[in-house]
Length: 196
Length: 47
Image (tube, rainbow over all chains, first blue to last red; front, side, top):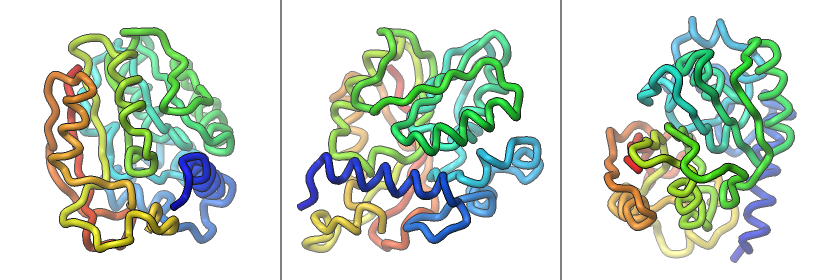
């Protein structure tokens, strides 16, 4: 069985490779066509920097179905290239702020470029692990999380950190892979199945 | 995909972590993987 550290490195490398070469071959879908298939309107994607759209690799259109009140403080946990963070930035407005957090430097480089191109002044990008959020207690109103729990065995630690950094009454909106039926014997332990 | 859990289990994890409420809003096509045992779910949790 792959170790936690080995899994973390493999996941980080897989998503970093998608950031470096979005049009390359990856074990999961990446990019604009995929984002449109999940319900992000083409017109909205046209209005956002290609550097964010081209490397999108989420599970659903979380930043669209989330309730984001203007002026709220939003955490995009596992922000990747920044598509959801950019949309949240618009929705929360100048009076709010967005923290986009990811463990892939390559994804954050893309998100940073997208942030500059979009002229978004209310986004802060942070390099960190989801299990150790460098954020104060009760600081976050809304958390967006687009498909990261199935990629990490230490989900209890991630959820513990989310409850710590969120204010009471705050909301998490997310999308996640779940099992419709039990996996056949051995599929949990096969390293390649973390992406399959 | 190997880290995916059943929906009820996932919601229990959220509640155990301290979320007051947790629910699945809808299930959707799993576009990330081709595994027939896995679907995607949109969810919401209240701190």
